Structure formats: C-alpha cells, structure tokens
Amino acid sequence: MRKGRLLRGTNKKMFLLHLFFLISVLSCTANQARLTVSPSSSQLYKGDFVSLSCEEDDSSAGWTLRRNTSKKQRTQCGVDWGKKHSSSCNITDLFTWDSGVYWCESREGPISNMVNLTVTGGSVILQSPVLPVMEGDDVTLLCKTKTTPSNLPAAFYKDGSLIRKQPTGHMTIQHVSRSDEGLYKCDISGHGESPSSWITVTDKHTTTPPPTSTPPPTSASITTNTPAYSSFLRCVLFPVGAVCVLVLLVLLVPRQHFRRKPEGKTQNY
Image 1: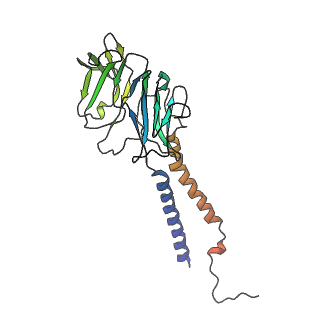
Image 2: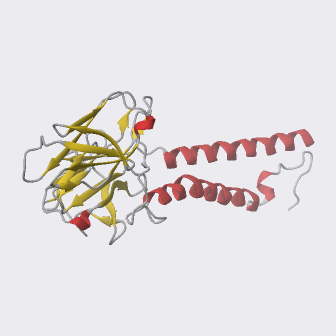
Image 3: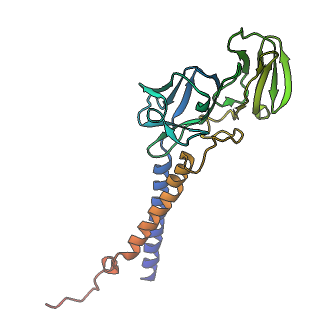
C-alpha cells in the first residue's frame, strides 16, 4: 500500500516536471525575426532614406518594428514614426533624433537582432556593417563625405586609437576575430570626423545573430520595458507561475477522487 502511494507521488512529480519542460519549450521556441536595413550602413546622413524589414522564413507577418531613441522608448513604426510599406518600414527623411536602437518584436515578446543606427548632420560618415560580422570574414570600412568623391585619404580609429591611414578612404580588416570587435570611426582632413559605430563579431558556429549586441551605453540604451525583459517574463516567470497553479490545483483536488472503495463492503441505502 505504501509502495503504491510512493509510486503515485513519484508519477505526479514526473508529470509536473514534464509539464514544466513542455511549457518552457512552447514559451521560448518561437521563431526569431531578422532585422535588415537598406542601405546596409550603421551611419546615415540627415535627410537620407532608409528601409527596415523584419524577416522570418520569407515572411514578416506578426512582427512589429520598434525603436529606442534619446527622446522616446519602445515606439512603433507606422504609429509614432516611419511609414509601413508592404513588409517594410520606411523613413523617407531622416533626422538626427532618428538615431537609436531598432528591433523586431512579436506579440509574444521574442526579439530579433538589434541594430544601432546613427544619423548625423555632419559631412563625414563611416560605412560599416550594420549586422554582426562572422569570425574569419573580411570586413571593408568606407569613410566618405556627402558632397565630395568617396576616395579621399582617411584615417581610421578603433576605440580611440589610430589604426592606419588609407589613401583611398577604404580599409579592409581581413579574417576578423573577436579582438577586432570595438568602436570605430574615421577622419578626413579638411572635412571632419565621423560618428562612432560599434562592430560586433560573432562565432563561426552562430547560426543566427544574437538577440542583443554590446554597443557602448547611450541615451537610447535598452531598458527593462524592452522585449528582452518581456522574454524573461515569458520564458521564466510564466512557466514557473503555470506550474505553481497546477501544483495548487493538484493539492486542492479532494482526496476522495483518488481513493478506491474498500473491498468487501457494501453501501447501505
């Protein structure tokens, strides 16, 4: 008899563990979108055009494009800024206050890679990869001005230190590694200096870009109201809460439902 109770108790525990695992998997395995930017540059001029798209298996249904800027947090394309066009969100006339962090978000909370865009009113920009770069790849940086040819001599800097000077304004980093990750900018004599942009390097075995990159802190940094926090709620607190509710239900069910009638006894009427 005691052995039977122990077995029933063990079965209940295993059931709850399996149920917790199932809820966690269903809560956290939603497909992530991939945010793409056209033109593919992390720095843009004031007045330029940019198009952003949330792509997932050749479809963008169900995804919302959001951003954090120095002025507002978690604002939505088509409502607070930009115009929706088919599966894209277009900003036809960029302003400096459009600088910030952009990402795709679904109703359930999963996020895409985050893209940090900088819009400048200056005359020099550094064209660098807007998405993380894979280890071993070659990366070309272009220092250009808005009104003059893009082949002027330029100096390139990483984390504030001069890397090299290039006579044509192009610099290629061959076979990038984690040590190449950092903050880059360029300078063209007589025209000025570009803003700084963070270049992220990912491992070769990474199949998708990480949900967050690690740019230096800015006024447009992600806060606890962003989808990263929503994912924590969805993937951790929700499954734990669901299991707690199930445990309470099991404990509150009347024991009579689990008892068998004693053998050999009849009920009198």
